Amino acid sequence: MTNRIESGWHLDNSYARLPKSFFSNLKPNLVQSPKLIILNDSLAISLGLNVQALQSEEGVEVLAGNQIPEGALPIAQAYAGHQFGHFAMLGDGRALLFGEQITPLGERFDIQLKGSGRTPYSRGGDGRAALGPMLREYIISEAMHALGIPTTRSLAVVTTGESIFREVELPGAIMTRVAASHLRFGTFQYVAKWGTDEELRVLADYALERHFPDIEVDEGRYLSLLREVIKRQAALIAKWQLVGFIHGVMNTDNMTISGETIDYGPCAFMDTYDPATVFSSIDIQGRYAYGNQPNIAGWNLARFAETLIPLLHEDYAEGAKLAQDAITDYPEQYHSNWLAGMKAKLGIGNDEVEDESLIDGLLTIMEKYHADYTNTFRALTFDKLEDIALFGTPEFAQWHELWKARLGRQQESKVSSQQLMRDSNPAIIPRNHRVESALEAAVEQEDYNVMEELLDVLSNPYAHSAEQNEYSTPPSKTTSSYQTYCGT
Image (cartoon, rainbow, N blue to C red; front, side, top):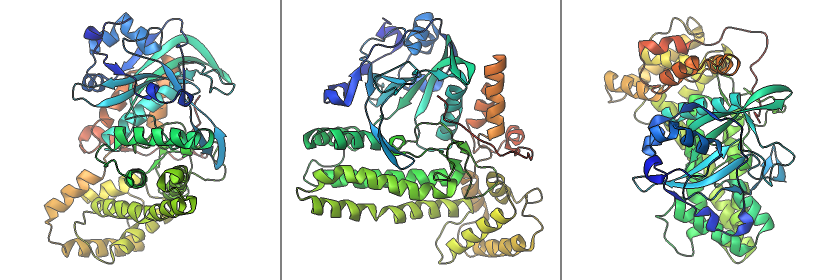
């Protein structure tokens, strides 16, 4: 075992003290020859972990699951979920929760190994993961964190020294994921379907204590739980939309109670603005397209609300009415977050009735002329419009005059308005072609410099530095559309 004093592990296992039906105790599947590929030094330090110890042979053995850190009690969590609208029994099919790291500030974070091998929930899979998808999650989750979007994070990626087979032979890898918790909508769906009302109450009380400790312990606390989850999801999805992020697989098991983004499978960032944009190879009908994400989040919240009905009122009909009333607040909450964010992207600091039509007008023109989403707002921020697709069109010229007039009617100075835009419009996003180039170099050539350079420029997306210009260029036009896959 690693020494806690040297490594900094300070693990608790509160989830493992819940009813035994919620999880399965497991020993990690050993791997042949683990090798550390990347370590998130700043995250490790914030968790109270010793970077040097994690880089040591023993530290890498822990990150690979070959050794168990002091205080760990490895488990795989059970959950369920609606996958593309169809309900199924699920669970951590290739992940292992070591426990919860207590940081020097007293915060609690799940430490999970992803790709660590088979579990009782593997459903025929091998429980392993390939290097490319694990590095992809590392890159995207760290980019999301830098963009100010709540997200799980990646502590490390190690290769296993073993091959896995996904149509072709690929290097195996394990990622260490850090999360506020892995409580999912699907966790509640699992207990609501196969557990008792008392077990559901235990789970809800655990969620309240862990994520919403300020909610008073009274008869209305479960309705408060529902409302807080709605509030966090409304804010989260708005942030996704504002930067053009497309999750790709918004199943209910991929939505967290904490309000963090989780499970970066077929995700990507939109280049050309189009609400119908889909990147996932399996989303044939466009259920999880960019423009559908707000409504899908509402649908998922309704499924979560249904699980709480027995706790909301002893009479099912009354409980259902309370749940329905709470859910009806979601569209307005989402819209309010989105509208405020879009106004900030345009430097608007006060309210006018016509603001939304001004925003919609710009988006309509962007869609018509296939404008790059990120770069259009970046060009507006610095009044450098010559290189964007809208420049020179009569529609944009008319809109631009309306926008300038709108800014002229507010009390905020031009300087403060531009600063608001700088703070709201990233200079860069993890462009899909840049991510793919980094992954190709890493997986096929064992060259990690491309990825490290990409991570460096993505670490401060609002810097608007000269070094970021190279990474802001959209991909060249191709005949085939970009696709991502559920990397298992």
